[in-house]
Length: 74
Image (cartoon, rainbow, N blue to C red):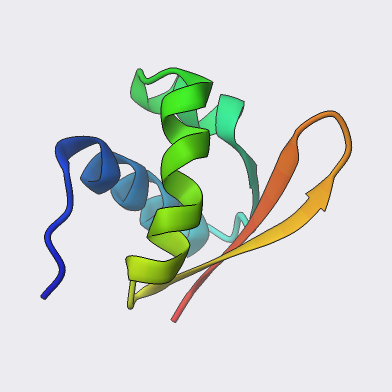
């Protein structure tokens, strides 16, 4: 099993709970606001979590003013 840092665990937990409620699209700023991290802390970790996570699919979806991430449960 992959080891996750405290910040990564918090991000994944938030994404799992939100995806289970039907949310699919996220921005780092919104995740950061919800879990008490900076948007930079979240934005740097999301690409790594996309590769590491087995139970959550994280896909870079679109880029307007900031990157949007599509999240689905595996």
